[in-house]
Image (cartoon, rainbow, N blue to C red; front, side, top):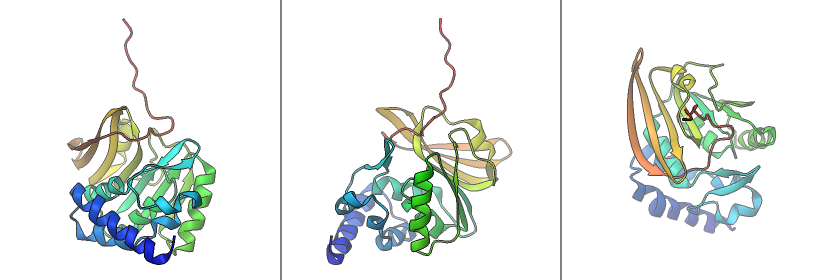
Length: 220
C-alpha cells in the first residue's frame, strides 16, 4: 500500500468507523489519526490494516477492530501520569496507543512470540515507556500494581476479583464480559475502598482471552 493510500485509509477509518461510534475525545482521535496501525499488523494484512475487521495474529488470536480500540481508549480516560496494565499484548499496536496517553504500560501476553514481535515494533517506533512480559494473566497480574488503568483486550465470562483488587483509588478497568454472541463492554471505576462504579458501555462480541476465567457452576 502506497503512503498516500495509507493516509487516506487512516483518515477514512477515523471518519467512517471511529467517530460514528461515539468517539469524540479529540486526544484519542488525533492519536489514532497519526498512529501507523499498518506497521503493527501481520504483513499479509497490511492492505486491510484500517478496515473494520478483526485481524488474525496467529495462535488463533485476533486484533481488535479500530473502533473497539478507540472506544476503549476514550472510556478509560487515560491521564499522563497513569500506570497502565494491558492484558493481551497481541500486535503491540494498542500497547503503543496506551503508552502515548499514559506514563507507563505493563503489557502481558501468554505467547512469547507475540511479546518478542511487539517489543521489536515498539522499539522501532521509539516507544520506551513499556514493560512487556510473558505470562498467563487471565486471572490477574498484580506484580506492578496498583494500576490506574487496566485494559483487557479479550473477552471473559466473568471478571476475576484479582483485577479489581489491582485497581488504584479512582482507577478504571475496561473488559468484555459474557459469552458469544452476547457480551457487553464494561467499565469499572474504583471509587475508594470496596466501592465500585460499574457501567455497561455497549454490546459486542469479542474473541475470548486465552484461559479466561470460568466461574464454577452448580450441577443439579
